[in-house]
Amino acid sequence: MSKKYKVIGIGNAVVDVISRAEDTFLDLMGIEKGIMQLVEQERGQTLYAAMEDRVQTPGGSVANTIAGIGTLGLSTAFIGRVHDDALGRFYADAMTKEGIDFVNAPVPGGELPTSRSMIFVSPDGERSMNTYLGISSELGPDDVSEEVTGEAEIVFLEGYLFDKPKGKEAFLRAARTCRAAGGKAGIAISDPFCVERHRDDFLTLIENEMDFVIGNEAEIRSLYQNDDLDADLKAVSAICPLVVCTRSGDGVTIIRDGVQTNIPVEKVIPVDATGAGDQFAAGFLFGLASGVNMETAGRMGCTAAAEVISHIGPRPEANMQALFRQKGLI
Image 1 (cartoon, rainbow, N blue to C red):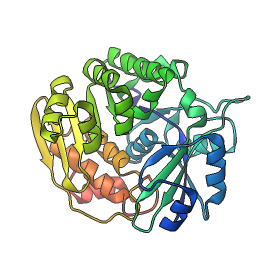
Image 2: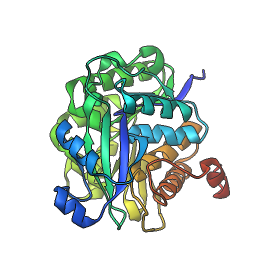
Image 3: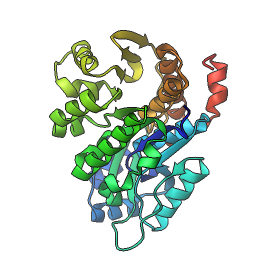
Image 4: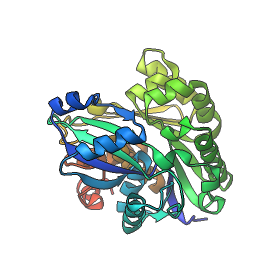
């Protein structure tokens, strides 16, 4: 039975506001380089005002992944929360223009403003993210329509949402309704700090509710803390049928039903590393949804990641289908 959607994402709907900044500017503004920090409304406004030549794009980790999958031609939807303000309307319109079914209309009334992430890109391509979560942090089970998630072959969840009890409930509702209707559910771990805060819950979720998990080396290591990546991977693959670990320039390791596949990558210096993990997930999930083998799916992920780090911004600019064809992946 074919479903209406190949992949549905649920996560933070964040407008990315990107600008270039020297290291001296980061020091001056007290911005810690290379990491994601959550900021309060006032700090968010200060940083926003300090940005020069701002480029605005719809962002959010899983939303970027869904956009990438959509550009590859699969039917997609996104579950997220924006306010009915200028940024929220920009976000909803931009997603719809990209062919993504933006399921929840902007919320009117005296709500928190739409989430935004102020991203400062240093000359070396490192990005320092300062995220004001706004209305996204209010995402809850009421935002998850079972008619929508029941129509998904794959639901992909954003680990960041796990920080709020309501987000966790939204997660479980999306995963369970999708799986009950014969679909698969998976999670992007998102952030080692997120794991630190909820390790037991995270592991319970992966073991009991997830069909796959995608994370980078730091995120996978943070789950079991064996201080040995192979041991950590084995531990995760013992509770989850499909584990995907990206190791930036060192390639990708995939373990599916106990079978390990390693995919090497060419090391390149990124122009802007924003979105590398998100687009890797897009390429990989496109492969998973298309039923290709793990090596091909992994190579699709690496190809998508390589494309996105070659330019500013977290979403693909090249024709990804053409790129996949050129590499003999489709």
